[in-house]
Length: 95
Image (cartoon, rainbow, N blue to C red; front, side):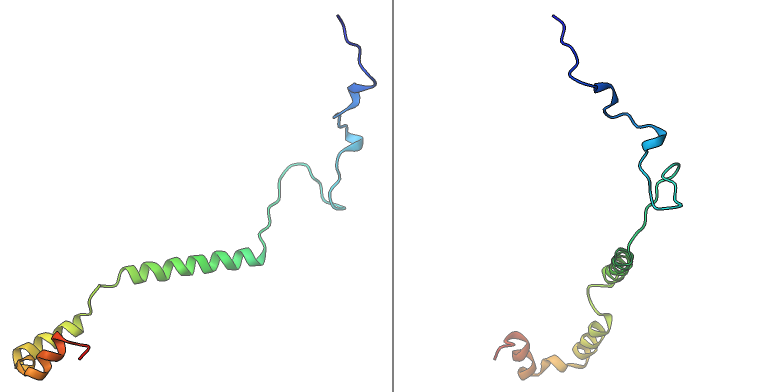
């Protein structure tokens, strides 16, 4: 059994030089693709880079402050924490 064509199917999807899609006037669509990034996207990329820079700087900081440890060590040596009121305030901070 043979099925005959129903109309001029040969022309569907055929693109010739005469009916090629035209771009903006004076700009050819042939050759290279063009990509442009909006100012908002550029700003978002800059902010993301800055966020990563700040995050990495914070991660690099020590968990404890050496100056606070030095002060506490000095106070222990001087007997500052031997005072009963100071000792109780350390053990019961809500009181």
